[in-house]
Amino acid sequence: MRRAESISDFLGLTAKLREIFGFKRDDRFGPWFRGQERAQWSLCPKLYRDYGGYKRVKDEIEDEIREEFIVRAPILCESLPAGDDGRTEWEWYFLMQHHGVPTRLLDWTEGALIGLFFAVRNNPGHYDATVWVLDPYELNKQVIGIAETIAPNASGVSPRDRIRVKRWLSPRFKDTGDLPKEPVAVYPTHVVRRISTQRSCFTVHGSDEKALDNREKKKNSCLAKIVIPSFSVSRIRAELESCGIDENTIFPDLDGLGRSICTNWLPDYQEPPHQGVYTRLRPSKVAKGQIGVFAITPIKKGTPLFYRDNEEMLWQVQSSLPKRPSEIRKLYDDFAVFKDGRCGCPPNLNRLTMSWYLNEPKRGEKPNVGCNPETYDFFAMQDIKPGDELTVKYNTYSDVPGTNPESFRGCRAVAKRRRAIRQ
Image (cartoon, rainbow, N blue to C red):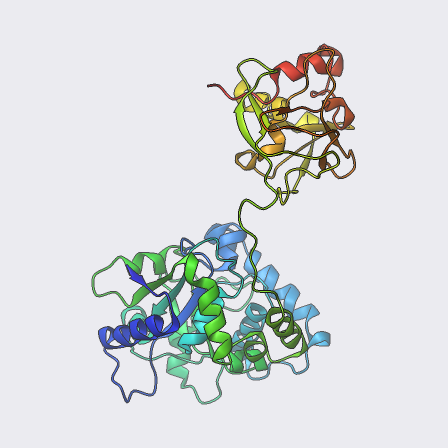
């Protein structure tokens, strides 16, 4: 695995890859680079990743998206794409990609450090990032039989070269046959400033969503991967800033300047993972066979609990909850908040955090934790000593679970089933 923990590491690896791909020192052109903030992400364009894959393209969803953009965008454009029909189709398509519209395009750049910037730009340092390195000339040699990258919307391109890539972007709502399976590498003309500043180039996916990923696994591949370890992300981001590569240089507008200023003046201090941590999970003392939340440090009355807990809540109509399998339904009954016919829980039940494991106190005892029923923030209602179990009354912020509350024997019966984890 190729790993880069600094800019110097990264540039050394890109230099080696230039040699492997067969580029000479005096070659004017070289590999393309694509930064991704998570190393495990595949090389899949947005249209396939988020909108149903190639089947949806065949069902004309892509043509509908292109049509809507071309109809509504002109009034918002500083300048309109120009040229004959074939060139205009490509210019609109490149413009769509740069404004976040789903397409079959993947962004690449000729600048190695620009690719590195996009890998670390929005990565908080919690996971490995990656920079993909592509030999576009070898890719096109294998796919269209010519070791060149074509600019299909440029005025000087030969009709023959334009025909070579025409199959990857047919006119809207015209059945010209299935897409080619493999992707092809193309150059855009600089229809907006951002394309020029970022030295943008693109691959256009065909019908196989995994075609580029599969190429990395092949012998003598035209594709390579450089991993940026999570612990190196902030360091590399600082090194890039010292080299003059930041939001304002990559996005040369007022929005880019604003983001650059915000980034430059952020404090360097990072809170330790134990900041605001007062509790941990242990076998419950008030609910036999269940897990409870216990204090590990003194907690003063009024202290907000579960600092930086994930506050995301997904609300669903109770009648839509699954009834089978029973253990899945029991997850909702045991952990979710029920309110006014709706059920609230984390966006995914694998994301249950400390606060979801609070138990009710024993009969006749008072809880030591309260909950704001509007924000679902928990706080200490009294001083709590290390070793004490934290308890709360569910009915102060949640209704009885289920669409038919009469079928339950009140919150006490529910409490016996909540927060269950089998030992």
